[in-house]
Image (cartoon, rainbow, N blue to C red; front, side, top):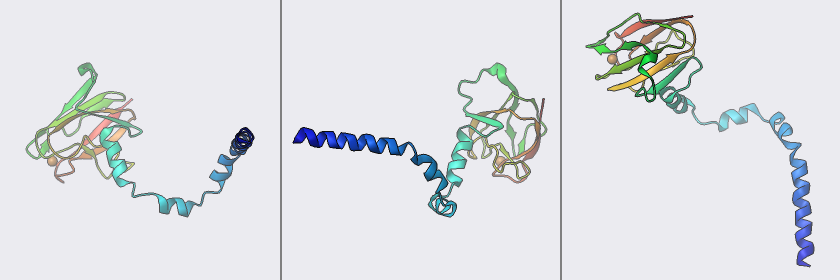
Length: 157
Ligand SMILES: [Cu+2]
């Protein structure tokens, strides 16, 4: 009797497994967009964390420049007082800009750059980060703490 029950269960499991193969498509098709939106938490903190740690489509941020070879760094950008020491840096696609500061500053894309918050070197405060730009363009930047600290980065092919 026990053996027979076990076999029945096994057959049921196999049967369910077979049906499952057809389920993913049906589930995706059945998603209610409004319900999904409602179920999603506020995404802002997650996006912020991603910016600091690394990946945006065109900018790769490496906190502390960990693992970056000095030979890859084309521009060293820092701060003095309430200014960036270079306000119009130039890079070739793929090159790295090293940002460092000991003040209440950071190096972040400004409102003219899409997507919003495309990159930032890290939270405002003493830190170092390496940013590799992988797309050509002209990008405004700023310090998130000081509206007067701005510049324009040019990345060319
Ligand atoms: Cu600042």
